[in-house]
Image (cartoon, each protein chain N blue to C red):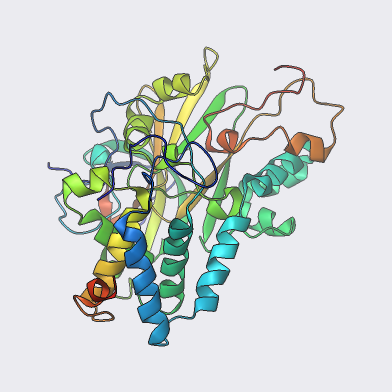
Length: 215
Length: 81
Length: 93
């Protein structure tokens, strides 16, 4: 079994690939063999697998950011979002995915939310793309519920005194999306500019959007 | 079993060797029903090739610790406090 | 009460959170999409996927990459159900 903590290696796309160490793990050859077997037997089609890959690579946090930006500028949309995030996403022409329930939770002056899946990696993929490695990691899954403020500190977030921290553990088929606070000093920005301020991490709850000047 | 928003509940502390979605750190803890999500197929049976029917009610439960933890817990893992 | 290996909430750890990220490799995208295709074909479901991942021996689970767990699970469930025969995958490698 390949060691997924190795550093450096030949990954085509970037320097931060902890998974492979120069080649592919044996799992790669096994899944290719399984795919071939299933296709040969007519149980699945190569085209369906290809569509799944295309779908996955097309997912990104930009969709979630559009929802957040719209909620920031349109208070009635925000209420609809908080009541039923699935429907709100559909309203914007987005695909909230097969999860029957997606819930948006709002960060305010008094409350900050953070999301984890301690049991595996449940995540609103349709709206944010695949989760980052750290979200799926054992330390995050462990400490998000036992030491959330320590985890936030590792991410560079320190909550003001009196702000209530709420950690949501996605233990079932409901997916949670954090609606982060709109930063101060953004009244002149249009929806697209606002969306650009919304990072994936802020929709998980481990980052806070910043106004452009405040870097 | 049905529960009302605001009701105090305890997560059953029973051992369950098969697949289930109630995390160990919450077993035996007392919380408050925050939200009712509706019903969903039962992962405990669906994980073994069964249909997952009848569906089970799922609740968002709030646990008051130093910081608040919220988790989705199925009805059959909860009992009135 | 003993915890299953996947049940990590509150598990004692001093390990810092490694925030490095990586773009999914081709085989990882394939694994993800393969599960989706199997699910749509009625060959397995997400609860079975999770259940099988949770059955990994502890050492293996804790050192496997995320999609290695999926690959293990897909193979195990399909073999269990007789969709693929034991040894068939090995014969192809």
